[in-house]
Length: 628
Image 1 (cartoon, rainbow, N blue to C red):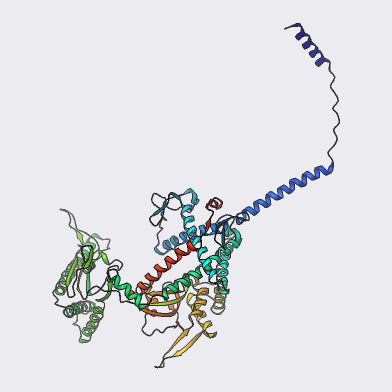
Image 2: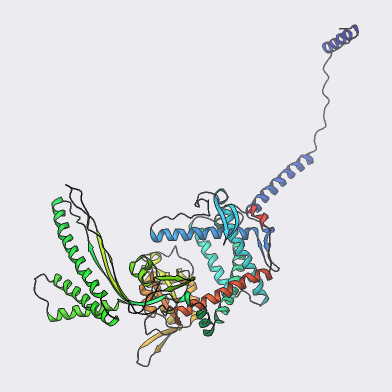
């Protein structure tokens, strides 16, 4: 170390060693007003932060963002969230209803390569697969959120276009439209209360973060206006389909509609039921006895259809069939006599009557190739056999052709050497039919109907109206006060009595002195919207076999009069009690199908065209603000 450096270091060390610490200088204290100001600013920022969080949670800032916009209408982000989750909720409800009805859980499947929908996971975390619109691939690796969002987006574009059309023609929502909306909102409020939520809290849970009842109301108003306009146009197109246009369309498409035929046929079924006895010897004896009867039945039925197959024409076929049915009735009647005595003439006559009734069911009209389950039978395969030549399909059956069919099952499998027979339930079918006429259009009669349904599951056995709301609760309160309990039948009767007392139902006397009761369709619709538990008040063009038996028995009764209501007796079915209303509009099935086809095609083209006339601007980037 150099001398100079050492001297400096020594001096520094000496200084450090001998230095006396300085007394700290006294700082000036902060003025009180400055501290107060800081506290106020901090509190203000905290309030602003909390306010921001609350407003954001309530969707206030989202409401400032427009997802879709036409010339005069807009859909904000919370409104779009409501639409997306309405698609989701509707899908869930549909499958839940199916599962309840059929007692099985059905997976909600996605697109190609996708996964089944899992309600416990977020939609964006689940793969839907290939998202298509018709044959067009929209997204080949979509999430379930993408699927519901795309469907909702198409709906919104159509809704806004319809609203613009309605506005252009001066259509607006009226009091009854707003009442219908309020009724739906009241239902949401009821469900919220039942599940322990505030209304807006429940709405947010169901339809996405930030969505409140105000957003739901605004979207419902747009949807209601669009629905009102589209229904008006749909009816306009339907009214424009004249009988002449219907006939012209049929003649140009005969191959599509001439797929129904008439035939006379019958199926004889021999059945064997394996013994349920636990004792092996007793079970064996019973099985051998029943198997012998089964074989006798099979032989007898095979003889019947052989006889029928030899018929020369329809008259001969029916005569032969009637005799076969008569013989069966005699056998059943003799088996029922425990004393072994011969049948009396009266008993034989009763057998003849039963045979005549059974023969009526053998005459089949308007049976179509498309009938459910029909193509699974040999008879239907024969009836609707076709051949194709030069690209043209032709049905080959000719009037008067007869055939028989057998589907024979054994009561046991052939045992291996040294083993006992193992009996099992079996049914053998023997059928024969005669083709009565060429292929034709469906001449089945259809009718339009309305109904107000009170479900047994909802009302039967109720001793309180706490779970009910609105007019249904008011009606139930009256029933409960009078009867001490509530039933679906009592609810239907109470509503009928109220309508009659208010003069809405009128009595009409026919020329023969019999009476029936009428109500104005608009009045029935008004009360139907308020009370029915079905998704529809009216069903157009109902064909036989489409509804439950009791419903159809009332609708297709010969004495039905247009405008008639089922006063004083509601119609009971497995669902509950229906207040029925006959709209009328009786027509044939083929004409109804063609009218619907023409009007639907025109309406579909119109709805597509107005989306060009009224373009909608979309801000799809805003999907990121929707919970998923």
